[in-house]
Length: 309
Image 1 (tube, rainbow, N blue to C red):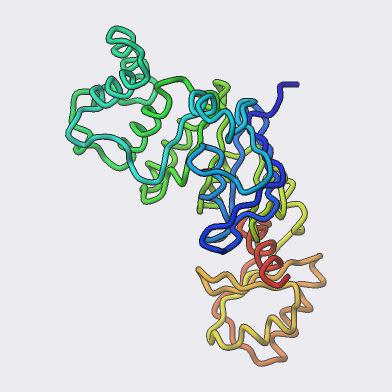
Image 2: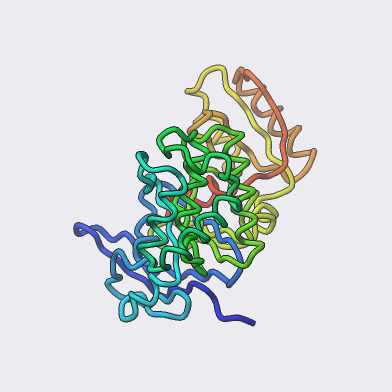
């Protein structure tokens, strides 16, 4: 087996007197995509900054492509690409000019830079827009150009920091296919995202951060199997009844973005019992539905447990 493309052990990092990473262990096998999830403040951005040599750990070790991020930072930078949340392309230059500029910065030479730019324009489906200014690109096209720029030097490891934030659904799906192609071609990717469906669709493995460390890691399917077979979703007419339902069903949690209460089920008998209990408590419901477990369920369960701990 190939050694892991990314490996961190016992990483601690304090920023402004506040511990951000607290014994982080993380491994990304070569040729795979690992999605790094976690609530705001869990340490995702700090982890990426450490692994891309933009910051140094207070203690612990981290290697990328077999190189130590502290003592061999130049070697690490030579083997990685980074697509940040903010676009790095020059909007006054065309797509082709942006790629040739970055190729020149990588010392590829004029002829090789032109050839590499043409290759990437075709690979990322930007050939028709190659000679338009990047400022005229749609959001999805601009993100594809960002990815193309990060691939100029053919990095072995690519860090994607929330690459589809702000994109419309069609553009997100298009970018997902580009990312899948990169993994199929052998690129190792560490992806941070706030979209759990994105992690479910793309990731070989998912690592969930909480309290500055990985609280759970598995395949998307493996994580969902741990939650249970089905989930009961209750939308309440009156939000103040949430506390009553949480008392009736201790395993329940409330999704803050929707306000609904989600209750794990062990089988049909429990479904009947929960609904009977809710009825007897006089709690009016706006809607009731049952679904298979999702990464959303996993995320909220694990992060709720972390907060409670």
